[in-house]
Structure formats: structure tokens, C-alpha cells
Image 1: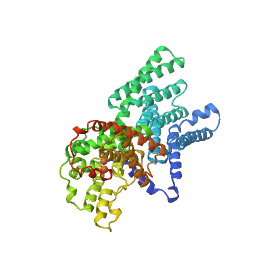
Image 2: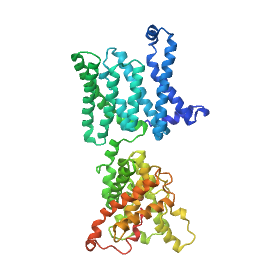
Image 3: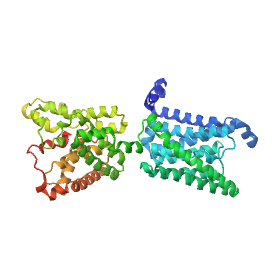
Image 4: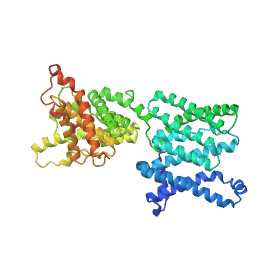
Length: 494
Ligand SMILES: [Fe+2]
Ligand SMILES: [Fe+2]
């Protein structure tokens, strides 16, 4: 059984009293929980504290709790101001809390079992590495800082060791930039070991200890570094599954043509496969241009039309100039068949356990757009047709990546239908597709600015011009198409 974070959160929320269900109350409860969970490991410290500071133990304990609350509140405020999306998503906050508290407890248990343990043999950068892979480098660094501060406050580390562990974590987070490619996992592992060795060696010498001790510390750091890399990679699927997150590694796996759904698409609907690859190239480049997630946009585009494998022959790109089944079908039925590829795609995504982000792109790539070709065809013969019957039943794009796939999809299909795709005509076509989606309100929830939309238009125009350039130069070699074919290639249709 897969334990999903959403299920756990729903159950926890169910037992909370009504007045505690406001977002702020839930965040305060979470913050309080973190403070308690981190301070509990030092309950036996009062005797020492009182002996050294000669003040009642509860005073130092209260100060410790308040200081820890201060750390947690400062980290929360940082997220509130600099990364509002993470702050708003309780799932992400809980993940950060789990990594932070988990790291404190790993250290506590290790010190309990082996009091003389060197801090370098512990997987110091583990939480920061997982935070980076699961959320982003910003969250990874935040976790690195608060775990180091907590380690210091709780007496697990001191002196130069604090700087060494912090530098080690920062170096590991930086090395994660290479993590997006599978073959570089080893490079990251080696970097984490080497940066740990260097930090431990220098910190021990800075403490005034001998070369022999420094070399020993460096050896411990090699173990700690290797342990961090192995655990980070090994625990990743667990965190992905519990928190319902999608990492770049998972996306890379899904982006491989060897995935069963991709293979099926290639065999059943080769035209759709080619269209999806072209859409993916566009969406990925535009994501880079507007600061969205390029890999998510690319993989989302690969799967956006996956529902077409149920009835590939009804979609223009798979007809290869053959007979068009829509010629003998009522427009209402045609529209139903066309629009059902969104629901079929969403069903397949669930069946193959694709990540929620990918399923959302499938569900949202047509938004609630109108299948205008069949609507006009039906309206010609019957004035009483309802526009709503010819609209997609999906939802409007809720993320920049879903919007990029929607616009790439429409632009690619519209430009492919152009007879003479000069750069001016391509740009005019892309602009028309984008303007129509804007005017129809499809981009209302996508979190894109007008400047972003302009960058998207420029990127798609430039790329589509070069993609269709060959046809422009050698029109005589292009295969002849039946007269009705271009008309059927309207962007709204697929
Ligand atoms: Fe499409
Ligand atoms: Fe589609």
C-alpha cells in the first residue's frame, strides 16, 4: 500500500477542532511541533547547563525553546517572503519539517549510541541534498542552515566543526546542479565525499589538533559523504511516494522513449508521437525563457496527447492522407470523440501511475476551449446547437508548464497547417493562437505575465520557422495532400 501524504494530512485535519483549521493555525501547530521535536533530545542537558551558568535549569531550557522557536519562525518568514509557493503548500512545509527534525534525531540517536562519534561520520549534508532534489536549492540551503544552527544550539557540534558542516552542505547543494542527469549521480557522490574530506581536514587543523587527527577526521568525512549520497539516492523514491513529489530523476525516466506508454504511442499513433516530440521541444525552450520548469514542460508535452492511443485513427496527424472518418460522422459525435482524448489521457496517466504534475498537464492542455471546426459545422446545419457541447471538459491550465504545453500544442498544429510558412506568417499564426487563448480566458490561472507571453510568442515563432523551413525552401518535393486535409488540422481539434 502506498501511503500518500494527502491521505495522512486529510486524516490529521479531520481530527482537528474546527477553529484550528485556518491555514495560519495549521502552520503555527507545525512550527510548534518542530520546536518540541527538536528540543526534546536535550532534556537531560539541564544539569550541565545549571552547573555552568548557575541559573535555574528551567530558565536555560525556556531560553532554548524560545531560541529554537525564533529559528523556526525566521525560516518560516523567509519562505513566506522569498518562496511563497512553498509556504502556501503545506505538503512542502511538512517535508522541510520532516527533513529538519529527522536530521536532528539521526544526530541525537548517533550521539546516544556512540557518545564519542565524530560528527563527520554522520550523513551531514543528507537533509540538504534531499531538500534540493525534492524542492529546490533554496530550500536545500535553508535546511542546511537551520540544521547547523539546531546542531549548535542542542550541543551536537561546536567551533570550527559548525563552519565545516555548513560549508559541506552548501557544497553538496551546489553539486546537485549536476543531478538532473542520471550519469552524473556518481559525479555528485564523489563531490560530496571530496568536499567533506576537505572541510573536515581543515576544520580539525583550525581547532589546533594534530595532522594525524585531521587525517582521521577526513577519513570519517569520506564515510559520511558516501553515506549521504547513498541514502539521498536510496530514500528519494520513498519521499517521492509519501509526499507525492516528482523529482527530475523521475521525469528523466518518464521522458525516455523506452517507457511503455511512449512505445505504445509510437506504435499506435506515430503522427501524434511526432507532434508530441515537436510540442515538447517548443514547451521546453519556452520554459527556459520564462523561468518555468523545462524538464516538466518537456515530459508533460510528451504525454499530453497520450489519450489518442485509444482511437488514433480519428486524429488528423495519424491519417497520413488516408480517408477521414469524420466525413461520415455527425459533428456532435466527432466533437465527443476528439474531446474524449483528454479524459482517456488522464485515465491512462492514473493507470500507469504518472506523477500528478504530468496528469495535470494532460487534463489542462486544452482547458475549456471550443472545438470550433465541428461547432461551426454543426451550427451550419442546426441553429440550435449549444456551444458548451463542443467545449473540452477539462480545466484551465493551473501552472506555467501546462499553459506552455497548451500554447505549443496549438501553435505547432496551426503552423503545420500553413501552406507557405514564412517567418512573418509563422509569427502571425502563433500570435493569433496565443491571443485567442488569452481572450477565451484559458490563461487566467496559469501565473504568466504579459512579458512572459511575449517571450513565448517569440520563442515559438523562431523555433517553428526553423522547423518548417525545409518545406518553405523545397515546396515541389512536399507530398500532395487532399484538399480537405489542411482544414482538418485546426489547432483546436487536437
Ligand atoms: Fe496535441
Ligand atoms: Fe490534445
